[in-house]
Image (cartoon, rainbow, N blue to C red; front, top):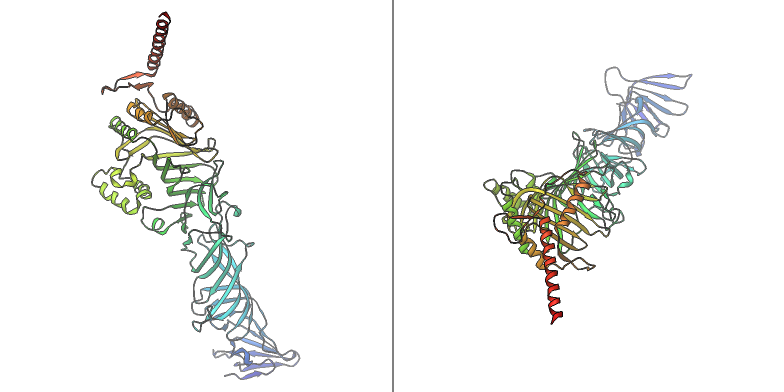
Amino acid sequence: MASIEFPKAQYKTSMSSARWDMNKQTVSLKADGNGASNWFFSQHPEQEGLKFMAARGEYNLQDNTLRAGGVPHIAVADTYVIPDSGKVAVSADATIRTLRNARVLADTVQQHHKLYAGNIDVLSRLAFKGDALNSYYNAAGDSFKLRFVDFTYGNPQQKKKPIYTFATANMEEGQPFYIFPRIMYRGKVTLHAPNRYMNFDGDLKLNFTGNPTDSDWFPYKKDTLNPANVRIPIIKPKATDGTPLLTGLHMSADSKLYNTFVSKKQADQDLDLFTVDGLLSYNKEKQEFKIGREARAYADSYEGNVLLYNEATNAIHFEGKLNLLKPNKNFKVEASGSGDANVDSSAYKLKTFLAFDLDMPKQALTAMAENLRGNAAGAVEGINSADETIYYRLAEFIGDKDARKYKAQSALAYVPLPELSRNLQRSLLLNDVDLVWSKEQKAWYSKGGISVASSMKDDINARMDGYLEMKQDMNGEPVVNLYLQADPYTWYYFSFFENGLSMASSDDKFNKAVRSKSKGSRGVATKYGIYQGQPIEKNQFLNYFQTTYLSGKEGIKVMPEQVVNEPTGNFDFISEDDAKKDKKKKRKKDKNEGEEQSIDIDLQ
């Protein structure tokens, strides 16, 4: 029971021991020694029964100030306000003076939030105001100080229930706050006393390059965010001005590669080689970020794009659909696979599955498939169905369901890809094509052999020698050179540039089919055309490739021979030099015959 009352301070206390110092005009209060609770009670009607425990106290008769010591806390609504050093001063009008360096525990039961360095004004049993800091630890364990204000006891949605204390902190752009490793946040943070995790409503910006200006802010809202287990949705994000933001790899108009991390492209017309969106997460042990749609990145789907970024090494790994060239009506290359890059350098490498759609005679494709399959007999298979990566590559063309179907069927017997889906009946399917980016040539070039899977409905399934170069010209149009060699005597060369496709081969059937549709020599025509190439063009490309990309080292061994015009079935060959001599003799003979005819006419 309260035994001493201080009318001018509008407080009373349960302490029964008091000592009056007449000289100092103070009354010293002492707690009961029997262990009973010792309280100070507010008598001010607007403080709604505010009270707090104390170990001792002193009342100043001159200024009517009450000072309490040994105060463990002041219960305000569902929080504890803990005064620094346990000291509380109450003015004559029952006002508790501002508690400097105070702490706040919210709520009183679970105490999820332990605020500190506060400047708190206790107003009543149900209200206080001021500010205090709360430490936020992201997934990497980095700590950030959030200053909370506007402490309110009520319901954030203005409902009758539930009622609890909540407060807000506003993080400005000028004070870097990494809600997630490498991910900056600006906006409002709301603390709800009963909830362990806080609510966020603002904007995010990725900072993977070390330069915040390389990316843009995009909206983000998440209730009860668990920093240790976050999957941030980044699905078709847009900047505050509505501009689409992308994450991936792009090629500029001047054929330079660059990365985006939820940022704007350098130019809208730049080629999107790879893009990804979905859920972004962080693996603390690997120091690795992952972004992708949930089924692919966080489940077991074979279909979809995913990107991994390791912040320790600045290395990027990506998988899924690739777009290496600008689409052309008569010449298309679709791609899937995986890639590796480094943010700090221009080193890019790809492992690809390529589907060529070529506007060319079907007879030529049939002849090529038959010849490659026959002369590559005994070669290493081009498709290894036991390799898990082939399912991911195929899924980008046929979907997850059919990729799983292929996995089940191929476990029992070999399954030709053209029989799996019509989407795989393409002019040419290539697998395991390793591509490296040349910064100097601004081109992708192949490294190692090339696996030829099929052509249209014809299965080939053979690993063979070959060279591939892909780039874009100054207008952004595709330029592609492809050389395939089943053996030193069996080769095919394709060259696409300026909307024309030139083809040459050691296969006469192939050449005849091309020649039947050829438009002759290249001119200035803007319409698509196919042209019969010459062996010398192939030789020039081989020399160029070896000099440019192989540092002049000897590459594929090529025999200086061609198949005779009319195959005998016994693999008869004549050399290119002999062929030239025969043509020269024939021209000389024709010339002589022409001269003889002219003489005969003149004599008549």
